[in-house]
Image 1 (cartoon, rainbow, N blue to C red):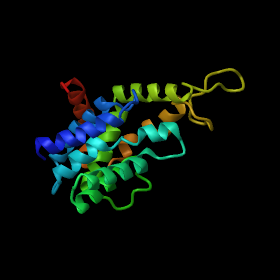
Image 2 (image 1 turned 120 degrees about the vertical axis):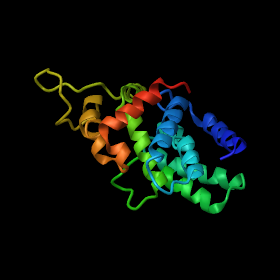
Image 3 (image 1 turned 180 degrees about the vertical axis):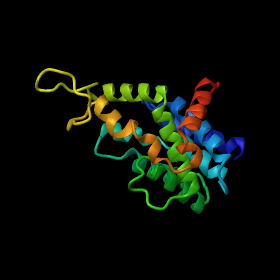
Image 4 (image 1 turned 90 degrees about the horizontal axis):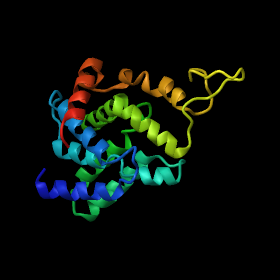
Length: 205
């Protein structure tokens, strides 16, 4: 990918990012992590991967305004329109759209490309690190979700048996088991993923 194309995509991403929990720094961390994972995979199209990483969260504003929307689907549609409007190849636009539309949930993904798998894993690595947990707390504060729920006897619930949203609930049903849902060997290797994460966190943006 040449500098002109990268700048075009980056500038579009920057116009869409106004959520402090899903900001440009998160986007850059995901991109750098994805590039590290890609070194251990075969037949990766780096142009598709870079474009998908840069633009994977541009639907967050719409989801924030309407929680019934899925930012992955909204973002994928926005990306596709943007790429077509800027004369990108149709196949390229469709593949980037595919990556973004499948980056949120694994259970509904079905058969996906290697670039989509790498984006999924890179995004989840950022969620699982300390900075990712901090992001999640910020986001839940923004949308009004409490840190924990209180049981009938007045004690704090661990979240394991909760039926209402809380950060503790989120931890037990998403964050705690995140490494078991990765696609790539490097992403699924917990120790290696954490090493990648620490390196990205300490690297200049």
